[in-house]
Structure formats: structure tokens, C-alpha cells
Length: 73
Image 1: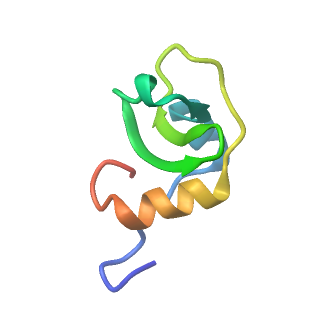
Image 2 (image 1 turned 90 degrees about the horizontal axis):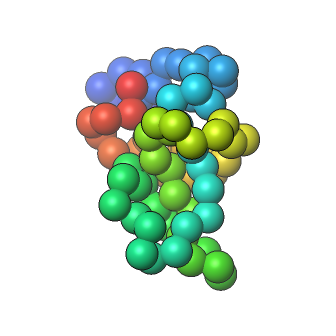
């Protein structure tokens, strides 16, 4: 929540259906909605598309939702 209301109101099932959380190299960042550096490249949150489901990375989800005011709803 913020002073503007709820930033994300989805079930974990919906989040897993719509987004992926995965390690990627710098060359594979075109569709990333949010990324943060990691020892092996970047941890990315992106639209799932045809990629297999991944587990939710709660830290990345929180950081994405609080930094991307539009797009993660």
C-alpha cells in the first residue's frame, strides 16, 4: 500500500501466470519490466509470454512494484 492505494492486487497464481522471475545476461534484457544486478548477471521480472512458469522472487516483486508505478497491476 501507499498513499495512492494498493499497488498490487493479484494472487500468487496470477502473478506466476503473468510474470517470470529469472537470472538473465545483459544481452537478454529487452522485455524486462524490472531488473537488478546479481553475481551472475541480472535478476529480472518480465512478462511471461511463452516462457515456463517460475517461482516468485518476493524481493524482486516488491522492488518492482514499488519502483514501477505503472505496468504491474
